[in-house]
Each structure stands twice: as structure tokens, then as C-alpha cells.
Image 1 (tube, helix red, strand yellow):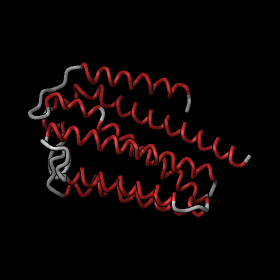
Image 2 (cartoon, helix red, strand yellow; image 1 turned 90 degrees about the vertical axis):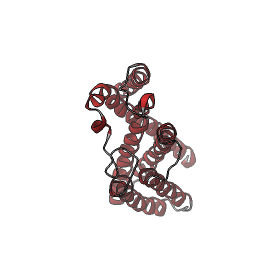
Image 3 (cartoon, helix red, strand yellow; image 1 turned 180 degrees about the vertical axis):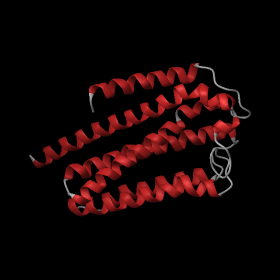
Length: 221
């Protein structure tokens, strides 16, 4: 990861945490101060999706040209993406506690997100069950494509077809429909937060990739 990207990640993350906690936010019924969670909960999910996209990209490259480099990159982006997904789910549950009255409501969006993470956790179980490197790489790459394809309807399509408490799902409007001013006043923190969390996730992934390569060099030496 290039130096300017690291600097940008740190600067943006500090900015998001400072501005997100100190700047005023619109006062909406029920949400109130808890709306600040949007600076963390949603960007973590965006980061997860982008990291999964990179994981799938390298999975496809591995299937076309089975280099161990591609397999390492694919699995490490999936590792960090899943970690971001778990953090996103936990922050969402905390937010739900203060807006819906309980950590878990069985909401379609919550359920779909949890199932998606379980599907990806099974990806790591699959990898751990195979000893042959080439077989592990090919099977996990194919499963990676399946996991990503399954995530799309679970997170975006099915929740929109059912009754849901989650904004933007099941006919429930997103935040902009509640108050047009909110989007204008919060986007200056929200969008940098999306970039910041993705850059941090990418940075962590590159560090893990370097560690994996050093481990392989040590094993092969």
C-alpha cells in the first residue's frame, strides 16, 4: 500500500471520529444522537463489500491462472472483509438497541446480513479442511464466487421485498426521506468515513498478505 494511501487513511479516520462525534446532527424522532452510528455502521459494511469485491477479483484470477499469490490475496481480503462485516453487524445491533428497543428483532436486513457472514465463515472452514494447496485454492475460489453471489439477494433484494424496520428496506424509506437536510449536513462526514474505513481495511489486508508471504518463504527455506 502506497504511503499517500496510508496517510489518507489515518487523516480521514481521525477526521471522521472527531467530526462525527462533535459536529451537530439533525434531531429525528427516536434516532436522536444515535444517528451518529451511521458514520461507523454503514461505512464498515461498504468497506466489507469492497473488500469482498477484491477477494472475488483475485479468486477469478486464480481460477484463470493458479498462482499462489492470487490465492493469498483472495483469502486475506475475505478475512478482513468478514471482520468488517462482523463489526458492522455488532454496531448495527447496538444501534438497534437504542432505536428499536432490542439488539435483535429478526429484521430481514439483520437476518440476511447474519446469514451472509455465516456463508463466508463456511468459506474459511472449507479452506481449513483441505490440505492440498492447489485443491484448496480452486475449491475456495469457486466457493468465494458463490458466497458473493448469495450475499447480493440476502442483503439487498430479499429485505426490500419484506416488511422491515431497517431504513431503505421493505418499503421503509432511507434517511433522506425523513429529512432532506440530514443528508446535506451529514454527507461531509459520511462519505469520508466510507473512504477511510475501506482504506484501513485495504491497509490491514496488505499487511496480512505480506505476513503470509514471509511465512511461506520461511516454510520453503
